[in-house]
Length: 448
Image 1 (spheres, rainbow, N blue to C red):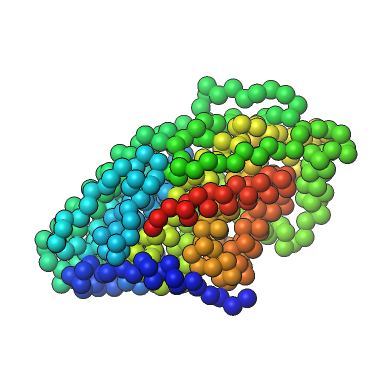
Image 2: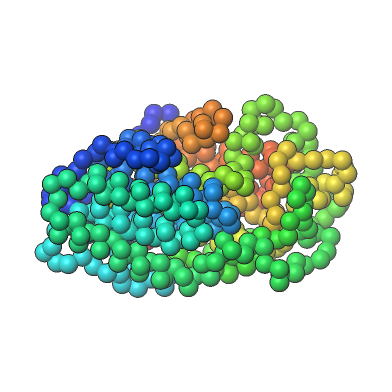
């Protein structure tokens, strides 16, 4: 299918670059951090001012990998508030686009630029993203804190040529004001300290034949059992779809679903094995939400979006990922459904093993399906579902790039990968895709 891009939304978000105030130098400043040099090289391909947010997301993905406690829901939360901060910090250059203040749950009016004053919106974005990321990753290593400081300095220098000092100062200060306001609001959502307490000791899971129990290989306790109680970003009702009734009857829907997983793992093709491993995105990686935002930044590069366009799609995807995590975890601990490995070993084959390790939380619904369902449908609304692309985000991990003819293809592959891996029933993925799509629809109902 031919690669296409729907430009109607982008045309409405035409970005007035710094009110013609400043000329940019797009050559990255050299520094002594090899990791940062790699980030700057990747971000430079975005071109123009969009290189600023791309560089910050590249660094944020590194922080997600290396900062303790940034499990998928915690990572999704950080990505969301980063995107909201970016969007609001450059709003003054987006030709009258509306603020998310007053639209997102609990977010009031945010600081506005001074009327009649000039701003460099790339510098404002740089300042805002540096500040919010420092706040969202308080346990970042000393090295990574230094990277944050250096990246902020490099971006500032690269976008300050021929820019009046008062414009630079005003832009920096405005970015910090936006970041402070967003962070203050974020602190009341219920997830601020999630990275410190992924496994709360006061949670007591229900007991019964159909309920989740700790699973191999690590037999960890329940992860983030209260995350579903967090404040969502979008004020919209969410569906509540129950899983099939638990049963050990061989003619039941539940048994057949478990048996499908059992047989599939035993008969995986080489391609299905690769798919399961490619989408695993487990501990020590950029996580499934990180994978989605990485793909989004790649598309920003591929389509050479300007700063306003990039800010819009990155904010939308981030909001969707955050609310997908909350909804998925609400389901997980509402139903506390037994994982396939537990069911299969109890009722089908005691020697069976999944292809990949089962994560420490209930089965229903699939996080991967919900995350990709939300992000993929948002990306489809922006670029068109028939947009063909290649995901290059895991080549550094030894994987070949994976190509898709549409975002639906990506959603379906990521979702079924968890069945191939042996850690989800097919209905976990199907309902996850459905609820992820509903999250996307809610996000897209806002004004941007």
